[in-house]
Image (cartoon, rainbow over all chains, first blue to last red; front, side):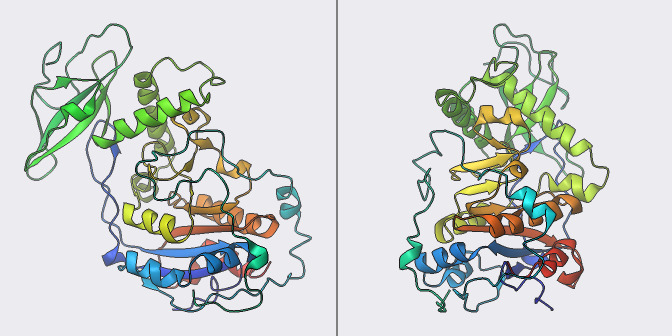
Length: 145
Length: 253
């Protein structure tokens, strides 16, 4: 399979859940007729779309992200290879894209004030952005993610 | 036991009169038959506390059924979901998220009926069965849990109060009114930042827009940003998917 399209810097193809391994959760709601969805025939692609800071943050947080994900989601076929910490190179033309200029004016998606999730069940309790301490993360190196 | 009479012949249900709140929640046990889903109903219990009304036995599936004042079943939920929604509703209310909702929120039950109705309306906008069905394609919990645990994911984009993972600190839903259940709304009105998971409906343009939004967010965000997209691939070659083309178009930022 040709993965180069998504296996680039901003988009990285992480893996695929084959059709015969893909099992959706039990449907949690119906209208007035309880009819299950038809059998699916597709694969599910897992793609990371990230910036340099995001990548470095994950590299700093967990030594081997994909291997950990592979343990937890064994039905997926993972692209187990290193994720680099190299900063992005600006591609010609991207910066001038008109859609991107408009996009720049949007606010960040900081969540509205709330009390957060059910703290008794949350694996991670954070209403605050994760502090990655980027300045201390290794630059221009490859970790074992 | 319930006021009124037990439904006898499956859906729709027997007229239920209620006073006070315009809607009541009842628990109904549905017995699966063979072939097409045949439902046999047993006397239901009126309850505001679904925990105490939960019943489970082999061959049956217990659901929470939402009735309107005319006694018509407007929708069914797994028994866990009303509790999740009730907690989310109460949290949002305490946090003041209900204060600016118009028209004002009257009760949990009426919001629940509205939620089901909006879901139906959203799905009915699409004629393609694959897209319609995708409203009910929910990621298994071990997948979202893995990303929360290892990939710092705290945000669930393009979800719904009806299907979001209650362990997610934050989720985004389509309709503004769903903030009564603690949802952030309109995922496209803000830039993605931090760590998110996104499993949109299987509508090509929606998936394309979501992918583009994630790419642009990664490009302009000054915060650490990663969005994990889970997208279907219809064909053998991933490169034929529109979102893959988009990734190819903007390989580097």
